[in-house]
Length: 417
Image (tube, rainbow, N blue to C red; front, top):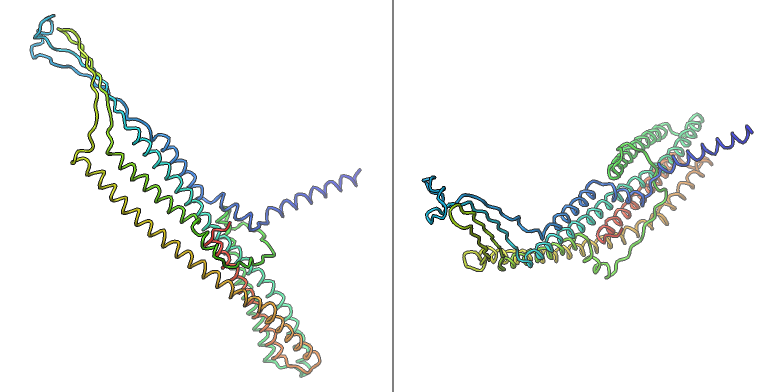
């Protein structure tokens, strides 16, 4: 019985530990998901869209009716008010109700225009997500590469510590030079300094990532241990897809919205209608009533200038925005072609590092280690071989970060999620 309870307790502990590990691990996909869900600027767009939709719901509303009342034709001699059926007693109390009836085409045009503003906000929201994705990816990749460099530095530190110990033992037998030992110890101190610097880089990126996820800035978590480049290849279809980018579609929707606003201005040439009903409760004569219809005349010259000039102004603005859209498409195509070309060159260099340069320096270090063990090599040459291998490995990771960063920017230009 005790054994069963012990086993169950250990299983519970294992489950709790596994859950704790799961919460401390953040994959790139999970990171991007949290950023798109929690970041305040994205939520701000949601409220902005809801605000516009609420405004559009009331776009077809009429102006409220107007109720008026007051005394009419009261004589200065109030004694006349007592006279009934006297034509001179024309005093009374008037009541009137007036309602303006807007032109339906105006209301429809206004609602279409306001609704179009929500579509612009949706595209802006998607583009903001794209910008946040790029920022999050670069921070994530930067931390990934910094951790890989840390591992390389720690391995190199162990090797150098072993070399220093071996050299100090050989120095007692006059088989090593003191100045070279001091140089190796100086390199060891530099390694420790580089590790501190990388810790700083990791901490800085952690703060940036936690901020994007809207969490405590000092929350610690693990990231992916293996990230490989996607090796994008440029094609003509890439430039065609640029026209579907959210920032360009936002501009296109803005142009469409301006055309709808122009339509609203054009409907100002159409008349509005109204109706007015009056009742007069007379004191000395029969009560009276009246009903009148009203219509506005917006086409008169002194009134038409207002909306006709607005129509012209918006037309020029639309042409200006069309040119801006063309400029954005050209610049996006240029940036996409540049990123692809740079990716190709960086990939070539990275492949050269991993397949040729680093293996060659590893062989150089192994050969010098063997010679040093056989007392036919020099510690100074061995130290130089160790240093060159470390430098080339660090350069290889610099190239990897350049590739990952360029891919993040390439995905930004094409708005790849």
